Length: 341
Image: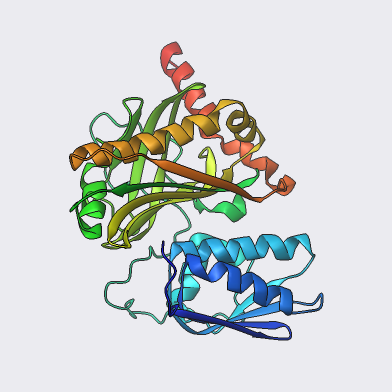
């Protein structure tokens, strides 16, 4: 996106402390990293969010990348000044595991989130409200959502974009089309089953997909959703640990649709699969989805992709994730069904 002449955020620091103000989204990353470098020493770095107005998923990406940098230097991060509902966002996304909240204060009983609050409330386990016809519900019910912090493999940020030419749809219309036609935008090998409530915060979308390794039954959890974007977060056992965001925005008078993945392979087997073929398969799927979006609006435009490895170390303490590997468990389910067990 084009850089704002007057960015809606400010990042400043003093020794051992970084202050984040305004709207925290993707553009904060360079200034956030500069502030971290200036916070000399090897002690903990406190991130003060008391003047933060809003937090987007792309802002979470920046915070996770900062945690990767801090971990590589043996430094710790801690969050302060978060309102109770933003503390819940840290819990829902799982980043409180690497940026713990200092002196947390829970939401008071009966207290409602601000109007239009787009974030899902924290949950210890996922629940499928109803089973759509034809859907296989495995490896979702009872699983907890996990983010990039909880995965095993290298951490990748992949961005897919398509600029819709001419007097195309408004950003809100793009997101509405994504939400209403998401299953139809998928290639034939992917079947997505949204809940009756649709793509809304806290809802579950089941996935049955045919992969090079066979059928896999899994799903995603809607971490965030508003009129301009929504984000799916993965459950335990999914091929990836992390999230993928869908958003639309206007850049120099042109409406652009974007898909951005921020995730790492869940376990060593999935990491091997991504290296061998899974990564290209995944990239092809999201490029297909954006091409489907273009066809929906009757336009032709090239889809471009950029990717970068933002976490170059394996998290060996997460090797045990393989015990919930959705591919293996789906295969075992299929074998049992054939054998009549």
